[in-house]
Length: 84
Image 1 (cartoon, one colour):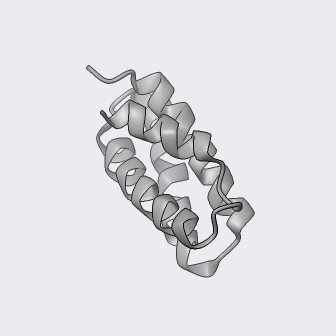
Image 2: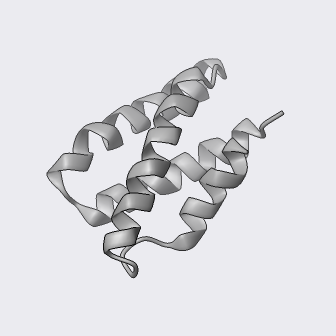
Image 3: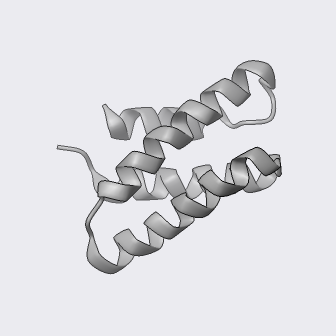
């Protein structure tokens, strides 16, 4: 069973990472993730959070592969651990 509170916090960190990267192609994902965090905070249903958290993980891993110093490894590790 996943710890959804830890996952929620990892997703919050991912939105901050996308904000720091500040590229248009991540704006939609960042927005959806922020919405899902708010929705989860309201109803504790993690479905959207899991979907967009997984997408965020893939995007951050791909971005980090090209820009190793621009994404904190802990964000990726926390997302991976939470999804495992």
